[in-house]
Amino acid sequence: MQTKQSKTTIFLLTAGCFLAFFVFGFTDNLKGPTLPAMLTNLNFDDGTGGNIFFGEYLGFLIATLITGILADRFGLKSVILLAGLCLGIGVSGYSASSSASLLFISIFIVGMGLGSLELGPNAIIVSLYHERKGLYLNLMSVMHGMGSFLAPLFAGWLLSRDVSWRAIYRWDLLLVALFMIIFLFLRFPKAEEKSQIDFRHIPQIALKGDLPWFYLAICFYVAAEIGIGQWLVKFLQDVRNVNVINSSQALSLFFAMIMVGRFIGGFFVQRVGYLRSILFVSVSGILCIVLGLLVPGTSFLLPFTGLFFSIVFPTITAAVSDKHTENGNTILGVLFTFAGVGGMIGPWLIGLGSKYFGLQAGFSFNILFVLVLLVSVVILLKRSSNGQKT
Image: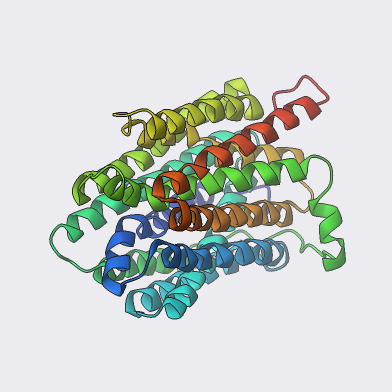
């Protein structure tokens, strides 16, 4: 993008990105509170539910890899409009399907939309706010948290009034339409030059230096966040005998904590440094999960994991974009591809573990996911060769 932009252009693009992340959070987190109703309605077991949602993150993975390259070649507006189109088609299909295969295909298309939406706004914010991208990426993620917070409340309220899970998803189409209309008319600065990336050189670009450790960190962080977001409601209902309203409110609290944490954490990260901040919150997040799962009467701690999870994704994004500016969109695309891998394997492994060992054991996989994140960050800190805040 051009480096010189008017204040109006910057404001409109920033507002558009914040709206996009609200839609992202709302759409992505309707599946958790509607999962029990969908499984009951269609007579599916937990393993089938995990397999269906595997499709979303497979689509997410593919989209992030492809859209990073498309953004470098054709610009970010085309990527964001592609996201809206996929969301509209996928949500429509998901709300109308009854077979596991059609649900898989529909949620796969939703995942394509979310993967495209992950890349676009993040890349725009990185290009607009070079010196304060850590702050603005966290603030933008507050909007994702707000959408994620409202989705379970909205779904739980409708479910308590015997509204079908299908109708709940159809309400989301209004948000998707609004998002598409606004971005259709939003003016994007033209790129100064098109990136001429040789596809054969992508592994060399994307795997240099310490990038693989960042990929591992974001992969298993997302596995934990999505794993909790997708299975918390069912865990509370089936294992802790919590009712529909309270379990949905617990999921909303999880995302509310993410939203609050990102608002506060953006300023914290600027002072403490990227990797040191992630190290602190990883340890705190593990403690919340372990206590909430293993100590009787402490289930309330599980939603508070979101407070510590909050800064991880945008802070990793900021750290990578700060260190690797050349072919930035492609590298971010690969980073988000690994996030898609985490989102794909996390809920799937929890569903698989729940099927064979019980939901308590399956949900405990989140502890392992955060441990891998923690180890990756420790290695990155040790590999830091200077005294700058990383």
